[in-house]
Image (cartoon, rainbow, N blue to C red):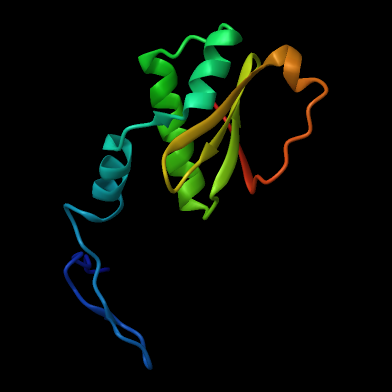
Length: 120
């Protein structure tokens, strides 16, 4: 029969440093920390959202935060976060929305200087 391995047992590599698995912290704590960071809109992004009729709701903010967390986990720094109606260019390390775009404007747009895309 297999014995249970507790999460506090050190796992060591033959030629590397000791690695411990931790409970009560780890990814869950890191995720909560990232989700608690505010999403900031640049002056340009605020202006564009207002001009284009994009409503910034708490639900949208939560979606943008989730997009940033997922992108950061993959190492992306500048992303396009989009759904069928709107898109945002976001600088992930600074948690800052750079611009906001509507569906009509997406049709003929080319997005440059991004290293990832996330669907809201």
